[in-house]
Length: 249
Image 1 (cartoon, rainbow, N blue to C red):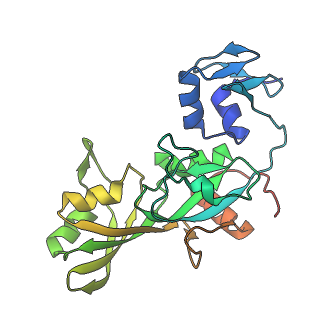
Image 2 (image 1 turned 90 degrees about the horizontal axis):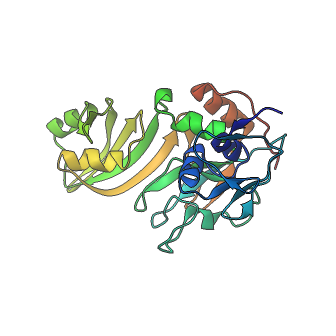
C-alpha cells in the first residue's frame, strides 16, 4: 500500500487543510500508530492516525462537500477560536462532514467564503500560481481622487513585496461615501484593507462578491448552500483541478 505524506492524508480525509495539518504535525499533536511524527513522514490509509488523541478516519473513496457561505461581519474564519469568538463553523450546524474554510475573510469583512473537505480543491484555489480573481465591493470614506484610484490599480508594496495590479471601478459616488469594485488576483492577509489604508482611504464596509466564476448572488448573510455541478465545473476549470467525487444532497 502506497505511503503518502501525512499532511496530505489528513487533507484528503477532510480533517483540515494541508497547511493546518503541517502546523499540527509541527506542534507534535499528530501520531501514527501511537508514535509522534514530524514533517515529511509518511503513512498509509491503513495506519492509525490520531490528533490530540482523536482518531482520524481515513476513507479510500472520499465523498466531498463544497459549500458557499455568506460570512457575516463579526465572525472569524476559523474552525475554532481560543478567545471564544463566533466562528464561521457555528453557521453550519447541520453539515455532517468535517469541512473547513478555503482561505479567509477577516472578522470585520463579509461575503463569499468557500468551505470544503477536499484538500486538493482548497489548495488549488489558494495556491498563488493559480491567480484566481476575487472581487470585493468596498465602501470607502470620505472621497476618492483620481490619484488614489491609479495607486490602487497599480502595484504597491506590502510586507516588502509588490502586489499584482488590481482592477478598480467606481460603482457609486456620494458626498463622503464611495463604493468601489476591486478585483485582485492574489490573497494576501487583509490585502484590500491595507491597500486602501496605504492611499489614505478609510474602509467602512468590505464584502467579497465573487471568487473566480463563483458569485455570491442572492445568498443571505449567515446562510450557505452546496455548489452546483455547473459551478464546480467552472471553478475546476479556473484552477485546473481534476475531477472529484461530489456528495449528492
